[in-house]
Image 1 (cartoon, helix red, strand yellow):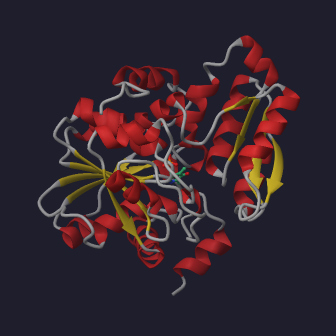
Image 2: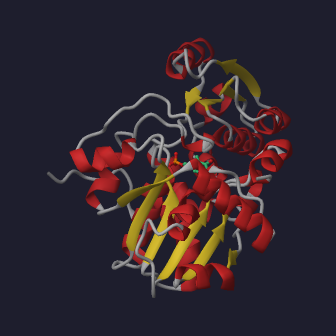
Length: 322
Ligand SMILES: *Cc1c(COP(=O)(O)O)cnc(C)c1O
């Protein structure tokens, strides 16, 4: 069955116009060592160098910028393991809109501090015991705030697709584009951009081995829900794809593979040692799959989105010290 998808390429293109001067056009980096290792030509899109340290500012700003005057006055509310919260806080600050972010108690200290630093109010919860949706609904109702979720929202998805749009504009058509996968905001936006700008390009999402709900969902043809996976990829601990993201992935022929925590650590070491890049564990998902033979990349031109670089330095040191 074919349903109308929640976003089109026009939505991605319009989001890109809105983001001018707000989101950085991040660099695309190459590595002769990574090419030799994989037999592919790899183009790394460095969203770890994006403002707020991850691609999430793209979707967050695109959504809050479209608020009505009444919504702007009421403010924006969201929940996040960190990067979306920071992005919403920063977008709201830029637009002069109040923001409230509900964050897990075990979110990295740096992410919590950055969110509060952008002027947002932060409320903590226990991610293994409480449902953030319930907390959000109560607070949004009490305060008249508009909820912008981390991935399952057309304007968020369209904004996230602008990273891939920039990548294709810079390096031309690719044989394959690979991104991390949590709830599918980044991957759905990427898929829409890819299908328009490079119709033959294979589109691949990579999720943590500990939580392959996306892979299961595409295999089953319906959204599969899992318990919160325990993985170092803290920005991809979503429990299911969304009702907006899933149909996009399904209908645009996206494929999903997984990477283990050990492979993520290996990729983090590679980026730090060889390319002088700090990439957070979740940001390494795509690269880890490409570098560990989970995908047939030999002889291909492959785009790999490094989605974020927000990791506490002591945690980073601990992970790469082995
Ligand atoms: C949010 C996030 C992801 C996952 O994005 P989804 O849109 O939820 O699939 C991947 N990497 C980083 C760094 C993130 O912040």
